[in-house]
Length: 406
Image (cartoon, rainbow, N blue to C red; front, side, top):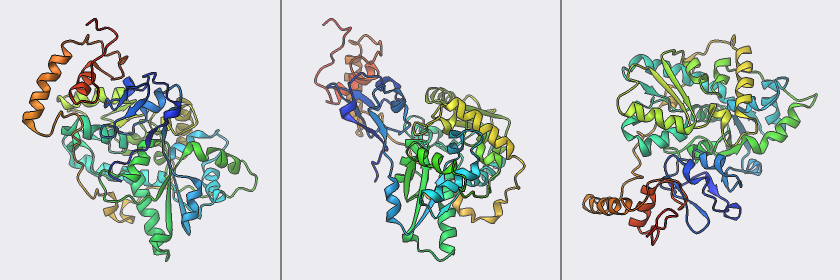
């Protein structure tokens, strides 16, 4: 499972147009031979290539609703982003109840885990003197591992709501006498990065989540059930701030910090992380980063326009702001801890052997000086440097360029 990636190529739909090539923040896509290729060692599953592809040739691999049959007891973990997909009159209580009609035995609202994680982050903010970076977006974490390893120490060491919800749901079911092997924990995801986070976690030995379904795949059924007159409803146990995590800025509101920066969209995130890396933003307490525009409501696996979904979730969250106070001491504090420290990913090195790497670096520079430096992506690589590197590494046999005369 070490190399698991949710983002996949549907080769039959790929026309080799290179739209995906320049969208990738880690230069993980190439188009050589009229078909795209995703380099697994560099992919962060951010989903940028899914959004860029005009032919829907990229997809986020998820599990199927048929996988419910594999478990005796099924628990749904709906991400708060799902509540922004429906019209205002579709109450969250009905959305939660609809999962029972879909075949689940129980629903654990991830928004409640967002409330708990918010309280834990508050504690970390009191202890820290350096700017902390949210560890909620798994695509951002993987990008920091790959491109900004010096910032790993800035990630707030608190488990994401996805895992906290999964652990709590499993613990509570086991206390009622259910066997762990009989329990299926199904996270309802807005993005492929969270699928990968569950299948191949970076800070855990194993995820508490069994399977991952996408919001887009179950949306139709949930909408149908939610609109039924006799649809069962479930009590909301989270606060409005917990539901607000679905949109960019909602996490900072829940954490209660005002000396913060909120950045969404992968291009903007890379710029902000670069500034932090060179020593800027030291006077900021908390930096909330989301790979998708709008936060989780902007994930590739949702149905609603992210800007409209943002308004919907904000209004719904504001109505619920007077919910009960969250008591952090009511849960086992170890559920917030990472099993392992997050480690850097060496995705950009030319070779593990320093001598060989230096030699390759010299050759790369020689090749690069003969290229125009337009970084147009027309050759199939995102930049001239990446094109030269592919040549040096033997991936391609020549450095063909539409602007090169010789």
